[in-house]
Image 1: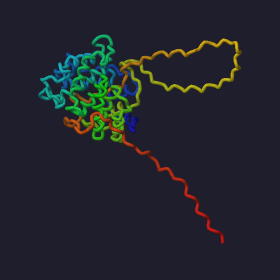
Image 2: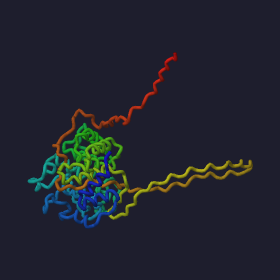
Image 3: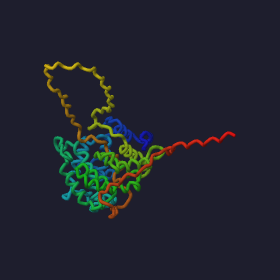
Image 4: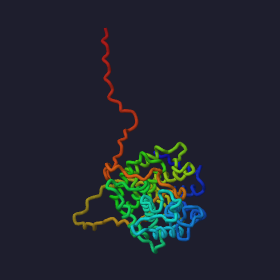
Length: 389
Protein backbone atom coordinates (compact mmCIF):
# COMPACT_ATOMS: atom_id res chain seq x y z
CA UNK A 1 0.00 0.00 0.00
CA UNK A 2 1.25 3.50 -0.86
CA UNK A 3 2.22 5.55 2.21
CA UNK A 4 0.44 8.82 1.41
CA UNK A 5 1.48 10.47 4.67
CA UNK A 6 5.15 9.89 3.85
CA UNK A 7 4.62 11.20 0.30
CA UNK A 8 2.96 14.35 1.62
CA UNK A 9 5.84 14.85 4.04
CA UNK A 10 8.34 14.53 1.18
CA UNK A 11 6.61 17.29 -0.84
CA UNK A 12 6.40 19.58 2.19
CA UNK A 13 10.09 19.04 3.01
CA UNK A 14 11.51 19.31 -0.51
CA UNK A 15 8.99 21.32 -2.57
CA UNK A 16 8.89 25.06 -3.19
CA UNK A 17 5.96 27.40 -2.60
CA UNK A 18 4.22 26.36 -5.82
CA UNK A 19 4.64 22.66 -5.02
CA UNK A 20 3.17 23.15 -1.55
CA UNK A 21 0.28 25.16 -2.99
CA UNK A 22 -0.47 22.35 -5.42
CA UNK A 23 -0.35 19.83 -2.59
CA UNK A 24 -2.66 21.93 -0.44
CA UNK A 25 -5.22 22.29 -3.20
CA UNK A 26 -4.98 18.59 -4.02
CA UNK A 27 -5.66 17.62 -0.40
CA UNK A 28 -8.20 20.23 0.69
CA UNK A 29 -9.28 22.28 -2.33
CA UNK A 30 -7.92 25.47 -0.76
CA UNK A 31 -7.69 28.24 -3.42
CA UNK A 32 -4.16 29.12 -4.52
CA UNK A 33 -2.90 32.70 -3.95
CA UNK A 34 -3.27 34.87 -7.03
CA UNK A 35 0.43 35.73 -7.15
CA UNK A 36 1.35 32.06 -7.65
CA UNK A 37 -1.13 31.78 -10.51
CA UNK A 38 0.27 34.95 -12.08
CA UNK A 39 3.78 33.50 -11.89
CA UNK A 40 2.64 30.24 -13.51
CA UNK A 41 1.13 32.19 -16.41
CA UNK A 42 4.24 34.29 -17.08
CA UNK A 43 5.78 34.23 -20.54
CA UNK A 44 2.62 33.54 -22.51
CA UNK A 45 2.92 34.51 -26.18
CA UNK A 46 0.45 37.05 -27.59
CA UNK A 47 -1.28 34.32 -29.61
CA UNK A 48 -2.12 32.29 -26.50
CA UNK A 49 0.47 29.51 -26.36
CA UNK A 50 3.71 29.32 -24.40
CA UNK A 51 7.16 29.09 -26.01
CA UNK A 52 9.31 26.04 -25.36
CA UNK A 53 12.42 28.13 -24.71
CA UNK A 54 12.99 30.92 -22.24
CA UNK A 55 12.36 34.26 -23.96
CA UNK A 56 11.27 32.39 -27.09
CA UNK A 57 8.77 33.92 -29.49
CA UNK A 58 7.30 30.83 -31.18
CA UNK A 59 4.67 29.04 -29.10
CA UNK A 60 4.90 25.26 -28.77
CA UNK A 61 2.06 22.76 -28.55
CA UNK A 62 4.06 20.59 -26.16
CA UNK A 63 5.12 23.44 -23.86
CA UNK A 64 1.57 24.85 -23.82
CA UNK A 65 0.15 21.51 -22.74
CA UNK A 66 2.60 21.31 -19.84
CA UNK A 67 1.78 24.87 -18.76
CA UNK A 68 -1.88 23.89 -18.76
CA UNK A 69 -1.04 20.90 -16.56
CA UNK A 70 0.59 23.21 -14.01
CA UNK A 71 -2.39 25.57 -14.10
CA UNK A 72 -4.68 22.59 -13.62
CA UNK A 73 -2.79 21.71 -10.43
CA UNK A 74 -3.27 25.27 -9.23
CA UNK A 75 -6.94 25.46 -10.19
CA UNK A 76 -6.31 27.98 -12.95
CA UNK A 77 -7.92 26.40 -16.03
CA UNK A 78 -10.84 28.80 -15.82
CA UNK A 79 -8.66 31.92 -15.80
CA UNK A 80 -8.27 34.07 -18.94
CA UNK A 81 -4.69 32.91 -19.63
CA UNK A 82 -5.74 29.26 -19.76
CA UNK A 83 -8.79 30.04 -21.90
CA UNK A 84 -6.55 31.94 -24.32
CA UNK A 85 -4.17 28.99 -24.49
CA UNK A 86 -7.01 26.52 -25.08
CA UNK A 87 -8.36 28.66 -27.90
CA UNK A 88 -4.87 28.75 -29.41
CA UNK A 89 -4.61 24.95 -29.22
CA UNK A 90 -8.03 24.53 -30.83
CA UNK A 91 -7.07 26.87 -33.65
CA UNK A 92 -3.84 24.91 -34.26
CA UNK A 93 -5.67 21.68 -35.08
CA UNK A 94 -4.86 20.30 -38.53
CA UNK A 95 -7.54 19.27 -41.05
CA UNK A 96 -6.96 15.58 -40.20
CA UNK A 97 -7.76 16.21 -36.53
CA UNK A 98 -4.16 16.11 -35.30
CA UNK A 99 -1.52 18.58 -34.15
CA UNK A 100 2.06 19.37 -35.15
CA UNK A 101 4.72 21.79 -33.95
CA UNK A 102 5.63 24.93 -35.85
CA UNK A 103 8.22 24.15 -38.59
CA UNK A 104 10.53 26.85 -37.21
CA UNK A 105 11.12 24.64 -34.12
CA UNK A 106 12.68 21.85 -36.19
CA UNK A 107 16.25 22.87 -35.42
CA UNK A 108 16.12 22.18 -31.68
CA UNK A 109 12.85 20.34 -30.92
CA UNK A 110 13.30 16.92 -29.27
CA UNK A 111 12.13 13.72 -30.92
CA UNK A 112 8.70 13.74 -29.26
CA UNK A 113 7.98 17.23 -30.68
CA UNK A 114 9.82 17.14 -34.01
CA UNK A 115 7.75 18.99 -36.64
CA UNK A 116 6.59 16.71 -39.45
CA UNK A 117 7.39 13.44 -37.61
CA UNK A 118 4.33 11.09 -37.56
CA UNK A 119 5.21 9.63 -34.15
CA UNK A 120 5.56 13.09 -32.65
CA UNK A 121 2.31 14.19 -34.28
CA UNK A 122 0.41 11.33 -32.67
CA UNK A 123 1.86 12.17 -29.25
CA UNK A 124 1.04 15.87 -29.66
CA UNK A 125 -2.49 15.00 -30.81
CA UNK A 126 -3.09 12.88 -27.71
CA UNK A 127 -1.61 15.57 -25.46
CA UNK A 128 -3.52 18.51 -26.95
CA UNK A 129 -6.70 16.46 -27.20
CA UNK A 130 -6.39 15.51 -23.52
CA UNK A 131 -6.15 19.09 -22.27
CA UNK A 132 -8.96 20.30 -24.49
CA UNK A 133 -10.99 17.38 -23.16
CA UNK A 134 -10.50 18.01 -19.44
CA UNK A 135 -10.71 21.80 -19.71
CA UNK A 136 -13.61 21.99 -22.14
CA UNK A 137 -16.36 22.09 -19.53
CA UNK A 138 -14.57 24.85 -17.61
CA UNK A 139 -13.83 26.97 -20.68
CA UNK A 140 -16.00 30.01 -21.24
CA UNK A 141 -14.09 31.56 -24.12
CA UNK A 142 -16.42 30.04 -26.72
CA UNK A 143 -19.55 31.41 -25.05
CA UNK A 144 -21.94 29.99 -22.47
CA UNK A 145 -21.13 26.70 -20.82
CA UNK A 146 -21.56 23.92 -23.36
CA UNK A 147 -22.80 20.65 -21.87
CA UNK A 148 -21.83 18.49 -24.85
CA UNK A 149 -19.09 15.91 -24.44
CA UNK A 150 -15.96 18.01 -24.70
CA UNK A 151 -17.74 21.19 -23.70
CA UNK A 152 -16.79 24.34 -25.57
CA UNK A 153 -14.33 22.36 -27.73
CA UNK A 154 -16.61 19.42 -28.50
CA UNK A 155 -16.02 19.41 -32.25
CA UNK A 156 -12.26 19.78 -31.88
CA UNK A 157 -12.00 16.94 -29.37
CA UNK A 158 -14.26 14.66 -31.40
CA UNK A 159 -12.01 15.12 -34.44
CA UNK A 160 -8.94 14.42 -32.27
CA UNK A 161 -10.51 11.23 -30.92
CA UNK A 162 -11.25 9.99 -34.42
CA UNK A 163 -7.67 10.72 -35.48
CA UNK A 164 -6.33 8.78 -32.47
CA UNK A 165 -8.66 5.82 -33.00
CA UNK A 166 -7.62 5.60 -36.65
CA UNK A 167 -4.00 5.00 -35.59
CA UNK A 168 -4.75 1.98 -33.38
CA UNK A 169 -3.57 -1.41 -34.60
CA UNK A 170 -5.83 -4.48 -34.26
CA UNK A 171 -3.93 -5.52 -31.12
CA UNK A 172 -4.48 -2.14 -29.49
CA UNK A 173 -0.95 -0.76 -30.03
CA UNK A 174 -0.11 2.62 -31.51
CA UNK A 175 2.86 3.86 -33.57
CA UNK A 176 4.21 6.43 -31.14
CA UNK A 177 5.64 6.94 -27.67
CA UNK A 178 4.28 5.03 -24.70
CA UNK A 179 2.82 8.12 -23.04
CA UNK A 180 0.72 8.78 -26.13
CA UNK A 181 -1.16 5.62 -25.16
CA UNK A 182 -2.53 6.73 -21.80
CA UNK A 183 -3.23 10.25 -23.08
CA UNK A 184 -5.16 8.79 -26.03
CA UNK A 185 -6.98 6.32 -23.76
CA UNK A 186 -8.15 9.24 -21.62
CA UNK A 187 -9.43 11.18 -24.63
CA UNK A 188 -11.27 8.16 -26.03
CA UNK A 189 -12.75 7.29 -22.63
CA UNK A 190 -14.18 10.79 -22.17
CA UNK A 191 -15.56 10.66 -25.73
CA UNK A 192 -17.40 7.46 -24.72
CA UNK A 193 -15.32 5.40 -27.16
CA UNK A 194 -14.91 2.80 -24.43
CA UNK A 195 -13.92 -0.13 -26.65
CA UNK A 196 -11.01 1.75 -28.22
CA UNK A 197 -9.89 3.06 -24.82
CA UNK A 198 -10.07 -0.44 -23.30
CA UNK A 199 -7.86 -1.86 -26.06
CA UNK A 200 -5.16 0.68 -25.20
CA UNK A 201 -5.54 0.05 -21.48
CA UNK A 202 -5.09 -3.70 -22.00
CA UNK A 203 -1.76 -3.06 -23.73
CA UNK A 204 -0.68 -0.67 -20.97
CA UNK A 205 -1.57 -3.19 -18.27
CA UNK A 206 0.93 -5.62 -19.76
CA UNK A 207 3.65 -2.95 -19.56
CA UNK A 208 3.07 -1.88 -15.94
CA UNK A 209 5.78 -4.11 -14.38
CA UNK A 210 8.44 -2.58 -16.66
CA UNK A 211 7.39 1.07 -16.31
CA UNK A 212 9.32 3.56 -14.22
CA UNK A 213 7.63 5.16 -11.19
CA UNK A 214 7.34 8.46 -13.05
CA UNK A 215 5.57 6.82 -15.99
CA UNK A 216 3.18 4.88 -13.75
CA UNK A 217 2.30 8.01 -11.79
CA UNK A 218 1.67 9.95 -15.01
CA UNK A 219 -0.46 7.12 -16.41
CA UNK A 220 -2.62 6.71 -13.30
CA UNK A 221 -3.05 10.45 -12.71
CA UNK A 222 -4.07 10.97 -16.35
CA UNK A 223 -6.73 8.26 -16.32
CA UNK A 224 -8.09 9.36 -12.94
CA UNK A 225 -8.45 12.88 -14.38
CA UNK A 226 -11.11 11.54 -16.76
CA UNK A 227 -12.73 9.36 -14.11
CA UNK A 228 -11.53 5.93 -15.18
CA UNK A 229 -12.69 3.69 -12.32
CA UNK A 230 -10.22 2.88 -9.58
CA UNK A 231 -11.40 -0.73 -9.66
CA UNK A 232 -10.12 -1.22 -13.22
CA UNK A 233 -7.25 -3.69 -13.31
CA UNK A 234 -4.91 -1.18 -14.96
CA UNK A 235 -5.45 1.26 -12.09
CA UNK A 236 -5.06 -1.48 -9.47
CA UNK A 237 -1.81 -2.63 -11.07
CA UNK A 238 -0.54 0.97 -11.26
CA UNK A 239 -1.14 1.57 -7.55
CA UNK A 240 0.58 -1.71 -6.72
CA UNK A 241 3.59 -0.70 -8.83
CA UNK A 242 3.76 2.68 -7.06
CA UNK A 243 3.66 0.94 -3.69
CA UNK A 244 6.59 -1.24 -4.76
CA UNK A 245 8.71 1.70 -5.96
CA UNK A 246 8.09 4.26 -3.22
CA UNK A 247 11.33 5.22 -1.46
CA UNK A 248 11.84 5.17 2.29
CA UNK A 249 11.69 9.00 2.37
CA UNK A 250 8.18 8.91 0.86
CA UNK A 251 9.09 10.13 -2.64
CA UNK A 252 9.48 8.54 -6.07
CA UNK A 253 12.28 8.81 -8.62
CA UNK A 254 11.80 11.09 -11.61
CA UNK A 255 13.06 10.14 -15.06
CA UNK A 256 14.40 13.70 -15.46
CA UNK A 257 16.68 13.76 -12.42
CA UNK A 258 16.20 14.10 -8.69
CA UNK A 259 15.40 17.81 -9.00
CA UNK A 260 12.02 16.70 -10.39
CA UNK A 261 11.24 14.04 -7.76
CA UNK A 262 8.70 16.36 -6.14
CA UNK A 263 6.75 16.57 -9.41
CA UNK A 264 6.67 12.79 -9.72
CA UNK A 265 5.58 12.48 -6.09
CA UNK A 266 2.72 14.93 -6.61
CA UNK A 267 1.55 12.84 -9.55
CA UNK A 268 1.68 9.70 -7.44
CA UNK A 269 -0.32 11.36 -4.68
CA UNK A 270 -2.95 12.37 -7.19
CA UNK A 271 -3.05 8.86 -8.59
CA UNK A 272 -3.47 7.18 -5.20
CA UNK A 273 -5.38 9.62 -3.05
CA UNK A 274 -8.89 8.71 -1.94
CA UNK A 275 -11.68 10.08 -4.10
CA UNK A 276 -12.67 13.46 -2.67
CA UNK A 277 -14.86 16.21 -4.13
CA UNK A 278 -12.87 19.22 -5.23
CA UNK A 279 -13.76 22.84 -5.81
CA UNK A 280 -14.90 23.22 -9.41
CA UNK A 281 -13.27 26.60 -10.00
CA UNK A 282 -10.41 28.45 -8.40
CA UNK A 283 -11.75 30.46 -5.48
CA UNK A 284 -14.85 28.32 -4.97
CA UNK A 285 -15.53 27.30 -1.37
CA UNK A 286 -14.56 23.77 -0.53
CA UNK A 287 -16.63 21.78 1.95
CA UNK A 288 -15.17 18.53 3.23
CA UNK A 289 -17.70 15.72 3.14
CA UNK A 290 -18.87 14.39 6.48
CA UNK A 291 -19.87 10.84 7.20
CA UNK A 292 -23.55 10.57 7.90
CA UNK A 293 -24.51 8.93 11.19
CA UNK A 294 -26.39 5.70 10.91
CA UNK A 295 -30.02 6.02 11.96
CA UNK A 296 -31.14 4.33 15.16
CA UNK A 297 -33.15 1.15 14.68
CA UNK A 298 -36.87 1.85 14.80
CA UNK A 299 -38.70 1.00 17.99
CA UNK A 300 -41.03 -1.94 17.84
CA UNK A 301 -44.56 -0.50 18.01
CA UNK A 302 -47.09 -1.88 20.42
CA UNK A 303 -49.73 -4.12 18.85
CA UNK A 304 -52.79 -2.23 17.67
CA UNK A 305 -56.31 -3.30 18.47
CA UNK A 306 -58.24 -4.64 15.54
CA UNK A 307 -60.38 -1.94 13.82
CA UNK A 308 -64.11 -2.27 13.94
CA UNK A 309 -65.75 -4.02 11.04
CA UNK A 310 -67.55 -0.87 9.83
CA UNK A 311 -64.43 1.38 9.88
CA UNK A 312 -63.45 3.14 6.62
CA UNK A 313 -59.83 2.30 5.67
CA UNK A 314 -57.54 5.37 5.26
CA UNK A 315 -56.25 6.29 1.79
CA UNK A 316 -52.96 4.70 0.74
CA UNK A 317 -49.92 6.84 1.58
CA UNK A 318 -46.68 6.98 -0.39
CA UNK A 319 -43.47 8.68 0.70
CA UNK A 320 -42.67 11.96 -1.04
CA UNK A 321 -40.25 11.67 -3.96
CA UNK A 322 -36.70 12.63 -3.11
CA UNK A 323 -35.57 15.80 -4.88
CA UNK A 324 -33.18 15.25 -7.78
CA UNK A 325 -29.62 16.26 -7.01
CA UNK A 326 -27.61 17.54 -9.95
CA UNK A 327 -23.91 16.98 -9.50
CA UNK A 328 -21.30 18.85 -11.56
CA UNK A 329 -20.37 16.67 -14.51
CA UNK A 330 -16.66 17.52 -14.48
CA UNK A 331 -15.64 17.57 -10.83
CA UNK A 332 -12.60 15.32 -10.97
CA UNK A 333 -9.09 15.28 -9.58
CA UNK A 334 -6.57 17.61 -11.20
CA UNK A 335 -3.91 16.17 -13.44
CA UNK A 336 -0.14 15.91 -13.42
CA UNK A 337 2.11 18.94 -12.69
CA UNK A 338 4.48 20.64 -15.08
CA UNK A 339 8.09 19.56 -14.87
CA UNK A 340 9.64 21.80 -17.54
CA UNK A 341 9.02 22.76 -21.19
CA UNK A 342 9.68 19.97 -23.62
CA UNK A 343 9.53 17.35 -20.89
CA UNK A 344 10.09 14.05 -22.66
CA UNK A 345 7.68 11.19 -22.72
CA UNK A 346 8.99 7.94 -21.24
CA UNK A 347 12.61 7.31 -22.18
CA UNK A 348 11.78 4.29 -24.28
CA UNK A 349 11.92 4.66 -28.07
CA UNK A 350 8.74 4.52 -30.13
CA UNK A 351 7.29 1.04 -29.97
CA UNK A 352 4.29 -1.07 -30.70
CA UNK A 353 2.91 -4.01 -28.80
CA UNK A 354 3.59 -7.62 -29.53
CA UNK A 355 1.22 -8.52 -32.40
CA UNK A 356 0.52 -11.87 -30.77
CA UNK A 357 -1.17 -10.26 -27.76
CA UNK A 358 -4.95 -10.46 -27.67
CA UNK A 359 -6.58 -7.17 -28.65
CA UNK A 360 -8.45 -5.69 -25.75
CA UNK A 361 -8.10 -8.81 -23.60
CA UNK A 362 -8.26 -7.84 -19.92
CA UNK A 363 -5.33 -8.85 -17.81
CA UNK A 364 -6.58 -10.93 -14.85
CA UNK A 365 -5.38 -9.91 -11.40
CA UNK A 366 -2.88 -12.22 -9.72
CA UNK A 367 -4.08 -14.56 -7.02
CA UNK A 368 -2.58 -13.25 -3.79
CA UNK A 369 -2.51 -15.82 -0.94
CA UNK A 370 -3.77 -14.65 2.40
CA UNK A 371 -0.99 -13.82 4.82
CA UNK A 372 -0.66 -15.38 8.24
CA UNK A 373 -0.01 -18.87 9.59
CA UNK A 374 -1.80 -21.86 8.20
CA UNK A 375 -4.84 -22.87 10.24
CA UNK A 376 -4.11 -25.59 12.72
CA UNK A 377 -5.71 -29.00 12.18
CA UNK A 378 -7.77 -30.89 14.74
CA UNK A 379 -5.86 -31.85 17.91
CA UNK A 380 -4.29 -35.32 17.98
CA UNK A 381 -6.08 -37.85 20.18
CA UNK A 382 -4.38 -38.42 23.54
CA UNK A 383 -2.09 -41.40 23.94
CA UNK A 384 -3.70 -44.23 26.00
CA UNK A 385 -2.36 -44.44 29.52
CA UNK A 386 -0.13 -47.39 30.34
CA UNK A 387 -1.88 -50.05 32.48
CA UNK A 388 -1.04 -50.00 36.15
CA UNK A 389 0.68 -53.14 37.33
